[in-house]
Length: 270
Ligand SMILES: [Fe+2]
Image 1: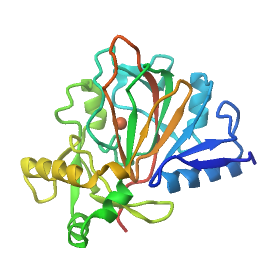
Image 2: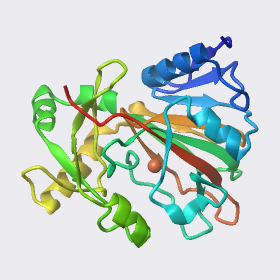
Image 3: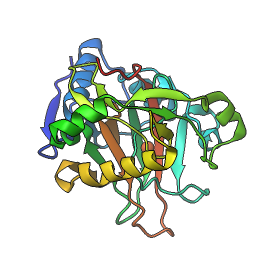
């Protein structure tokens, strides 16, 4: 087994991992240790990686099987399981707090981002612990959320192709609080623009409640802000976090990340 060194990056979440070359095959004990580290720290950073698309895909499978993304127009032509995040081809930075692909029955356990071109300043990715956010709510509201579900789809996502909406747009119901499959801790779970509504609420009231929750729950002390360096791989645990991009960089500079999502379990509360 590789000798892993795990250094926390923030009091609440995030850790840097040293001692693993993601460009080489990762042995079974190291894979298991990395899976446990992700569940514990919720965001992992590997520095100075030099990966081909095939090596990156192989490395991502440490965290689960790579799955198709519904922005097929941004897929890498020869490696369609890798999506290109690049704000010069019409994409807008995802500045709203969210967790990825909640319109899937088995949403991604993790999202991997690999820094290919990084602007000189700005353009960070922030990750918030929704486990800590859950614990920060009053007991009464935790109970309320535990009784609610969201219905998720691709309605209103004009940036998706008709073929992707056809494949991945059918409504999917998820609990608003989910238990982590590795250790059973609870986290608040929803996507404010993928959820068409919350059970028993109108779409308008649902959106207002989710926006209010985000405002109240995501306090600065629950957020790890990742300042990118070229060659970083950031792995985000989607089961217990939300994340957002920061668009605060000079658009004459390029910001290119390669994204992979890996399949997880169906979210459940018990
Ligand atoms: Fe995302």
